[in-house]
Length: 434
Image (cartoon, rainbow, N blue to C red; front, top):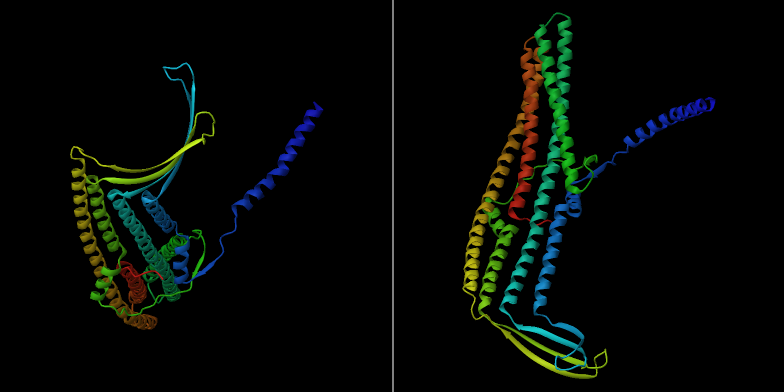
């Protein structure tokens, strides 16, 4: 009994000793170091996205796959060399003796005429062209996405700072109102309304901070960094007037937009598909030459030999209308692709027009908002002074603070819209990624 108690006390003591260590270990594991802060320019962000984006890597892999599919198709017209060995032992029905036969054969053959293979090669070429343009389009779209996300982070960062300044304005005003109320110079409603406006802006501040954090996470996702990586965005919003006219942008898009070039490749592929269907009406000709060695005794089978040359032509005499049906399908497919190409052309031109006009509209707002900010600042200053001397109302000051906040937010949004639509316009036009 004594030994049992000793053992129990020993076990309890070990548990008490180990528990704190376990707790500290858990705390240490849960407090993993955060990712280091990264400074990024816009150009850095685009470059990193081109190197790390998984979607782009997917399309680059698809392009490589199309390249090797083309090589596989071309191999159908290349030289093929085969080797066959046959070893057998059999007994003819008219004999009581077994016979051995050993044979070696090497043959080289090549397809010298095949409209089907020629058409398949052309289709594979257009598939490769399409895949290459896919990579170009994805690169341009990725650049546009990165620019948009970078500018979104800048926008929310600016709004975050604007909200901080607005909170300070409300707080300073509230402090003054409370001092006046303490002296019995203003009504309780002035204090309450000032507190409400301050609280409302604090809600906006919380939302702006969350929007900024989400924008940083989205940008990190674009460029291949951990989502919680802190970023220092070193570029700022700018406004540089766009020099091209709408007509110049439209013409540029018709010549450079990769999606339009893709439809040209699809039309060529559809034409090649028609040629492939028509190939069923033509023969396939193959040329072959080889050497054969055989023996009735030795397993190696090299005792006797002969060579041969052969020309083979295969042709379908009757197919119950199969080829004609395939030709009709292929022709309708060409019509479908042509209609899709025309629809895509209209869509691209509309996209360019919308982005261009939206960019110009944002440019006009930038100029207007710049003036509005100066007017709002002056108004806030005047209303603050008027209220301090008893010539103005509390509502006048609160409205002035709100007007200044609205003017600053509008200016930030106009800058974002201008730069964002400019980036979208370049994607719509097919401006290459350099």
